[in-house]
Image 1: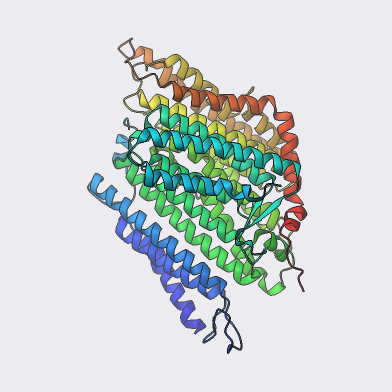
Image 2: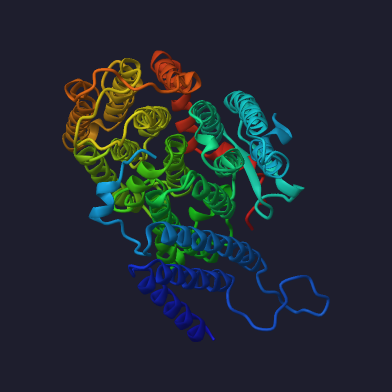
Length: 117
Length: 503
């Protein structure tokens, strides 16, 4: 199981980093999302990987898994979800205003920069 | 003893932000009154917290009454009280400016976002839990995304997307670092970490070193340390003027966190990390100062000039932080307070100019602006403060940094002194293009512009704060030295957490 989780993490992270380095906002956002999935699994694994053990008090349990990373993952999921929604909205706004969805700000943009706002 | 007041700087803006969104979203006057009232109240609470922190030992606030390290805690110590006070002061000036210049009327929800931003900043300073620090980072970031694109426009939105993407990567890195630290030490309480890191078993050292470097990378992103400074110029130059001024304290959060972790949790005496952090941070800080200075000299617009001045000031602050000695930490704290106020003043004054000009490019002279005399005077004073010329506090701050780093004089002194000269040249070039060459360019009569008394009051207020920081630099420095001493010997901070005995 360790091998499976570790390789999934590596795959998600490398795909996320690759997409993040693209020039259009859509792949960048997908890349950021993949990266946030990777980090969620990583936090989960920080509490050690065990099977069939409850995180909360149980009369019949002989051992427990660490409950804290599970709580942390919940927080991280909610936050990354909200952040993704924000960046999608901003990317849409930028696309509609600029007419294209390139991430980098080029020289021609620099010339129009500094107009009265 | 402050008791429940410790959480007030987090709860008050949270309630006010929600109330403004829900109850007064259609009435700008009501928003202004309540938001300004809340900021004033925040200032009063921050002053009381500062008084309490400087007269008594660090105090803990247990959320939900769970004992540390199991529950989330807030910690009031001298450093956090100082930073909350600084935030409240800055927020007041920025808010007065936003109201005076009608920036808050150019889009909706300015005041609600502003209060949520204050909640995140105060929470980040007060928290005593590393994961909670992440949560408050996200609160302040999500509010800052909204503030950054306030008013809209193509360039602002595109710069905003870059800013959000950069910070999302930073947040992911932060989570990777926290998860690694938790898997090694089994705790995320800052005081508990400070204890456990010192007795890390041999086998976990490598993993912890990776986590420590990742954590410092996150703080370097926030603090705009080279090579992670790329988000800053476009963001600050395109953000609305008052928002950029408020962001002056956001880079300081990176510096604050670097001090909190670098000095208290993993000082250079830690067996696990040794001088690793200092060895990485010092060259980066020197490069930051150099790039900031070159940026000031080469900036094509006034906004980018102010942004690169902010990068240069972070370079100086991080040079002092990465020495990790009590004297250097005290100097860093003094310089951070100064550069927050000076940076904010500069952004407000740049906005005063930009509002009265067709564009803020420095490549061509434009006709004189309305009230050019007053604004030029303000610009010169803030340029003197930012560049670190006498008689203002920038000079005192840089002097303190140089004095604290006497043993590395040849390199650091020459970098600081030469970069100051380059920054002065950059400001002189910008000032002469904007204010002096204006008279050569066509109509002698400046176009009329609204007087905006409140906006000028805010700018003058920040300059007055800088003057006060200079006049009282003796007592302030004594206070900072006591704060730095408490950071380098965190036994009182750890004792306040009442951690259970390690078996």
